[in-house]
Length: 216
Ligand code: DX5
Image (cartoon, rainbow, N blue to C red):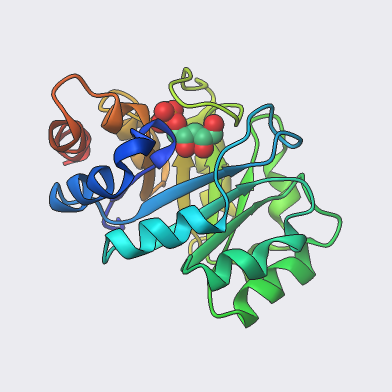
């Protein structure tokens, strides 16, 4: 079993205190930070650009990953690589040149991830799997934090794990102390958590601890 990594997503953070919120997560034992990039086309929300990845990069020693929920991500991977993202994830549904986009991410020195939406079959990953470092199984329809975990997600994680024993499996959306054990048991080892960390009533450190304790 892989060691479980907890990846706070800044989507639910107080952007007015972003550096402080990132440092809180780092001090509380987070393993990476995720910047949720949204373009208002691929998803009905608009969020952060490369300059926010740079700001997060300056605030922490943790690896910073950029999840590009954008149409034609190939237009943006260079800017995000230059901003300091050490892993760049693109949506399998968002580009007609996924192979070339993955190759470009790796040529830029970043690790390459592919995210897959809830209704997209796992088989859409089959051909690209040998070339990527991580699959992000979206456990909500992307676009907003604080949504409800989709119940069939653990089964989908298992199907990805059946396709590859090597690739890191990340999950993203509605991950908290209740849902985290379900997806870890199915084969996920990287847990993106927004609302259950930055919206946790006991604070960031308690939110991270609750998930850490739940997965042992
Ligand atoms: C897509 C976003 C969210 C976010 C995590 O909507 O990428 O999944 O990272 O959201 P929570 O953990 O608040 O559901």
